Length: 211
Ligand SMILES: [Mg+2]
Image (cartoon, rainbow, N blue to C red; front, side, top):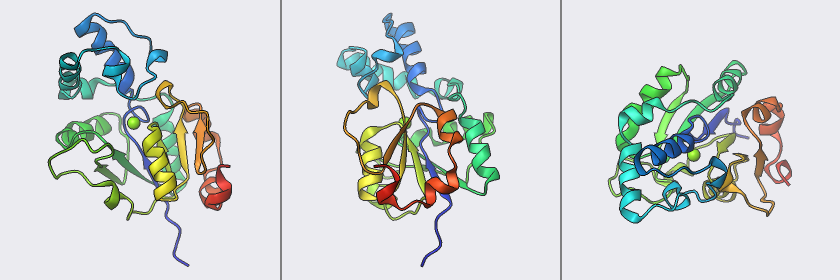
């Protein structure tokens, strides 16, 4: 039997970093539209805010500026949660779908908040990138993790279905879904994630873990 992985997959935006709330601040500042967080029922913030195509392009240009990415706040409880796992001997692999050119500023953000991690990987989660610096989903599937924390429903489904990985899905307005999915367990916030006994969570057989 192969040794079980002790590496936890952790997404960056809206798992560790408050990207959506920062997007909304920019939408108000730049386009004069005040949208409530709860109204973000579409994973595409530009769509959820009713922006025109040109405005959406402008929004994504602005949000990916280094000073914007660097000024995003951490998600409440995330840093403490990661620290707890580190003390329990788990390794954190940060796996983000941000554009490859945001690597440097993303690492600077992690350093700014003293978020220790074993690795940082950019994966083309949503088939958005044309340049080759991001890992493909197929390559990601060759990596072994014991658990994953995501806010994206399509990505959570990929991890659970294709990689047979138990997933903690952080409850967000854009990932609401009424159907129960094998392998995916919904958590209200980081406090709820960190309150669980991780050793039991990751060692349960996949099929029984989240029915
Ligand atoms: Mg995310």
